Length: 588
Ligand code: OXD
Ligand code: MN
Image 1: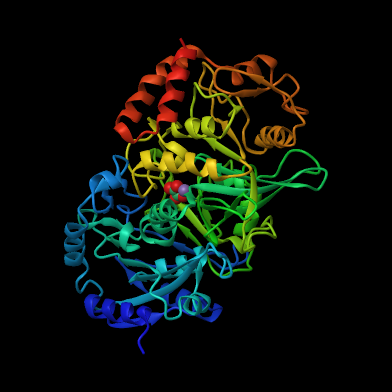
Image 2: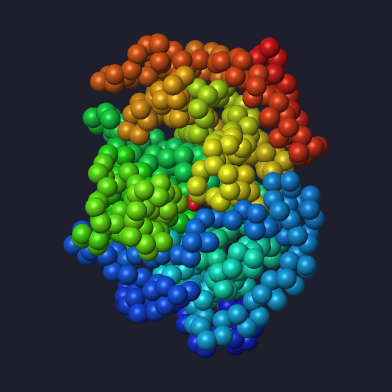
């Protein structure tokens, strides 16, 4: 008997016309074989993988992409639900029939002369009741190898899927890497994504943003759970107790640094469970539980260094899981190691830039692409939590939301209850960065850091958050943070990085009822002794500025929140409209 998975593979083969079909088993031998093949193979006029210095960076390989394909392309990303209203103003929408016709025309015969890789994979641990079955088709060996790092690929997935028809279908082809023929189309009702014309992680590793967030958020809405753009960490305090947190920040706001943080305090330790995506379910005990559906990090390289993220540097040089990939960084020719801005204070003398040219500083552009990335297994992370594979996930006590704001938003405040937390998260604004193509530095509203990733109408999504709160017997505390405030001279006021652990320590004290807080118009602030600033050279005036509500800044903020809410019309839950009115009155 043919299983639904076999039927899908056959249909794809007949439609895409590859010269070969290869079903991945996820073994180490397979990874070695594919890595070797990729080193001998040219795609789009470039060798797919080059070996890096194996002593400095064991098991590491270098990939350079087409310069037109270096980031997520939100304007080419569509959610094709039956109606435009279901997709909401937060998504580009196309009628599903029209979208399929368009994509079929691009895909038909697109794999001629290429290998069609079939990647059976799981999002989540095999024994988890919350994990999901998936199959991706791709004609990119780079994508196939990356998927093996980022998800659980192969036998375990094939076994779990068995003869079931219940699996996500991801259809991907790099086509001719032409932005004019590039689309990432989501079909939430069909549990399917079709992605054409890009090999970039966020567009092509379909388990990541496409499935785990856009399709996942829709499934969560249907099934009573949440798919979120969040890190998961366990923070061990001096008493040995571990408090689990989620953290949501828009792309490139230091999420990965926070996920691998080394606290400044003795006896404190951060255990890492995830740096990008969390799936949240309500456990039998009424608490919120989180799993990380992914199995690797796809992190931004620039800015990663021993000073800013020593644990990630150790992860990248750890050779346990094979291979680690670096994409669009520069290369230091003196020793064949990857290099990026921020890695060392001094620039190496002989660099090849991310486009393969000899680096010429006088041109004024960076050597590594600002969105250059590493793809590395989470099992290489020395601070990986022993609960990472726990099928039930970990119980969450605190949720941290933040954005990159030079003004308005204080360093930290605690929301008074779940609904105020949902409100605060629904109005997050952040200055845009290089993770998505388009203008950089403008403030855009990015509720829950999910604006580019919510696979349905965000008004319904807000309601779903409020409803989840009602179902929880124990609601985690919700905190808002902003590590990025600047003074009048444009200098960061808070040191950030490891010192962010001071803020987290206060949160743990709040969770355990050990620290008082001061009330304000927006929520609760640490009182005079709340934040442990031992050993930090920061003036009381700066702390005062970091922890106050500036009414005139908020007054400027409110119209843009109103404008954002207005886009969703009646879909914005009444509770949130009321909270916005209250905020407005308080800021008068
Ligand atoms: C990412 C992103 O790649 O958020 O994680 O853009
Ligand atoms: Mn992300």
